[in-house]
Amino acid sequence: SRTAAAGLNMRFSKSTSVRLESGLRSVGVTEPREPKPMALVFQGQDIPGQMTAAILNVSSASIERNTKDHPSWAQSGGLQRFEATLNEARKGGDFSYWRYRLDLQQYLPLSEDHRKVIALRAELETNQDKGGSRVPFWDMAAIGGSRTLRGFLTNRFTDKSSMTLSGEYRYRIWR
Image (cartoon, rainbow, N blue to C red; front, side, top):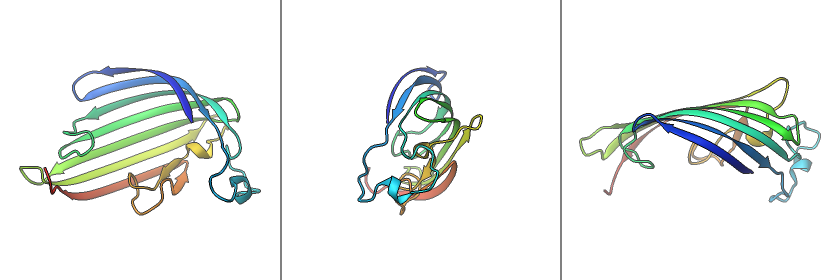
């Protein structure tokens, strides 16, 4: 997948911003890495985008509020982000759909020095086909892997919509 896009990011305060972006995305279906080609494994099944490359116009808008104290290992604060994206194929298939994503994170320190933290996270995504078009398999909502569902392979579960909820107790050993 390759994307060329231009965007405008507007910051209203230290923690609140809006982003508008528009571009062109090219998605190719390459030779398989596994011993069995996908066309053979899923033979006779109608999977949108299974053997089709596509070029899409992609336009998105998002609003974000980020009060996390650290970008990758937050110990307090939170993140709320909503994004809406319109994908419309120019070439390669009848793909025209909306993607909506909501990402919520909250970090609750349990001690003064922030060594003990409760981390809460919720992610929701849905893809809605537009005008009878279809959502290609390579853009379906997916969960699995260390970021969304530990213990499962990355992108283990895919569908038009997904929701993940997680909570964890963090105890910082080193400063």
